Length: 459
Image (cartoon, rainbow, N blue to C red; front, top):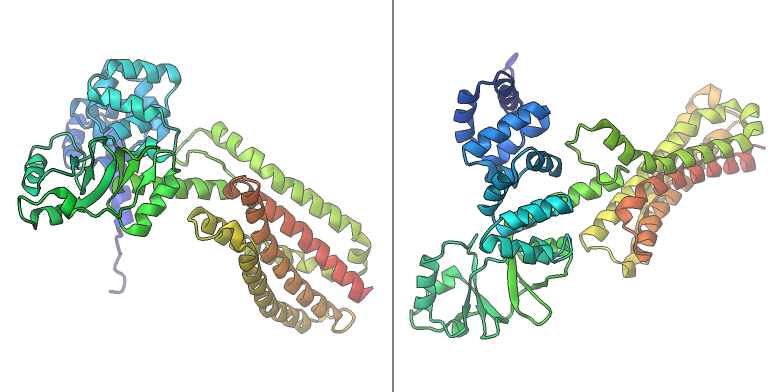
């Protein structure tokens, strides 16, 4: 309807968070407790980036009293987790960690200082402590580090009726998606679904029900490779085995979602040249320090482009109209170079582009750049030919800008492909180094191509 105001989900979300912030600031804790009781832990975690330190401490205290801190803690970013641990008595923190799954506790402890980690491990008692200590032995961001050691596995001699009874008695298993079948040495032999279990005769042994062809990952496999395997095969969980084939844990779908979110955020920040900066952090100097080194490459490239322009100062003085097209030539080249590099980096990250595909993807991006360069070269050349101030030497200036756009887009697409593939070959993360180097190279090559073409045709 005309004149009607549309209220989006985002608007409601912002209004809700603003209300919570005001309640904390006004110390209206009774109302806040009522809201906490009706709010999902993941939504409560989203309040913290909007709060000041004192307000966070008040909310931490309420969540501890309401026995919700464990649920919220697993959703918080590293900075807020550190703030909670530093501002809370260690026995209280240990008591909260004791109620959480071992893989979540491991993730939290891995970001803490060594002394604090050791102190909390000593305070955590029971099976949780032993499980966490085992998980901390694995390298960070591997299958071993993110797996849960609590899984449901039975002997291959177990019958369907016995397996069903065991499931009824489960208490400490995080999620039961599949029944894993192992031998006497705990080596993984097969898997079956709960549906298979309840739909078969009670006296059937599991070895006759199980599927022996199953997908597994090793403890040292990178977490992004684990996430790709779960996504590729549409699994709810994937078993983790050690070097001798023993089942040591499982990675569940909720952990995979966290990995995908973490890896995507990390890759985007790296390509933007901000490194591993925390996007929710309000620390101005920390953010500045993280971005400063990566901007140096672009700054150096800009200086080099200025130097190239200075070399052709005579041509610019003779034909001032050349200067008008510098921004669009640099901008269009930078855009297509960024597009190509983003496609390649993303392809490498998800395993769809490998080093053996170098020539294939290079030809594809080069051809794409040539076609785009042809289209935009005709457009820019046509634009230059319309206005009298650009009709320098009759048709020559329009031809110069048209040829330059064509050449520059091919160069940009090629550079945007070669640089990430080169970094992949020398075992440097393409997401970290590609952005600044692509931008710098395209700016310099674009300006150089422009003035070389202009010198050949106009002078």
